[in-house]
Length: 473
Image (cartoon, rainbow, N blue to C red; front, side):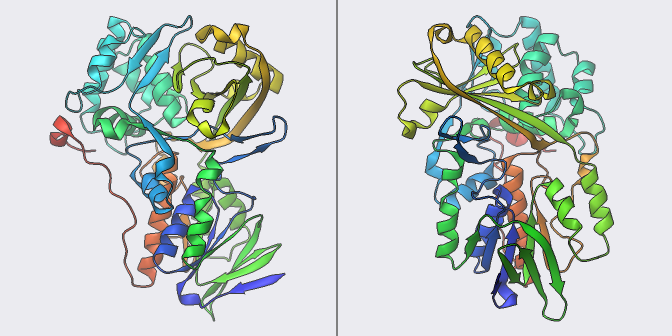
């Protein structure tokens, strides 16, 4: 076993190679710290990663991840590592009903928040009653929503007269998918934030971005960035314990492969992995309180079905699929042109569906193909060449009313140790943006600890148009 040790004052060990850990590590390296980023797997990305699937002999994403124009910290992280150009942006969203009828949502020339209204009002997927209900809801959500509101989105929707069509085809699909939870398990403030950011503040804020390369390829630049700033990356290194030496003011992170010593420690792990590590951390005041906060968190699953056909199924890059178990279609052959496919590669996503997650591989794939044919007739005459099912049972954490009390800040119970992760107190739900924000907040806390204050957190996009005159919540 080797021992990696540097001068303690400006050294940091970051545990966890997901978006939170990568963003913290790169920010600190840029600030002149010697950073060691430690990841238990052989690749980066955490829950937003890709890997070689031996069953289909393809590199696949564990689930399709998207970002939006309002994700200023995730975009800032991508710019830092030089991959912002690998994101394909669009402002339009196609909704498809069984049978193939389509509705297009997206901005027009009108000022925010009116920019999306004309296409919403023209959408054939919604009845007149649905459209009026949605317009009333949007108007109501322009008013402030208390951050500590205890009402769920579902209760609010019913109280505000939302129709079944509006609930099932917009709220339950678009918003519940964005937050990956059932509408009766979503705190109203988080739903209001999604509505404002994606549909009201500006067309730019609501634009959607998708990687043009597999996710782990997107993060390949992290290793080069760290190396170029005198820092390093340790893969396949499972952390067993972390110890604090009061005499030397150093942390020692123990793995099977190496012990890593540093002056500062950033725990950038999912909440359940943080809970496990707590048992192998020094005793400290506040640890029990942190453990109690972690116990308040619960996961929601996301499933993705990957299908390869012998011919083109659709020329759409992506679409929202209505009234079926499937929620989203991503045409990975078009989104990732480097694959150079002869036929089609589609990824179908089912959000917040424990029932679908309980299906066997054969059942899930059969159901996905059957439903897909209802939206795209070419499926019926195409040959399915191969398929894969990915169940990310711990995809996101839930955001029920009161969850903010269980989200700790960057400061931990231990000296020179800071917390990061999408589940920490970022003000955002379980998203890559929340993870990137947490990494930047942890990096700021480290800089503050050495009396070198530095701002890494990128500010939110400012509202445009008429939204500039609306009170922010």
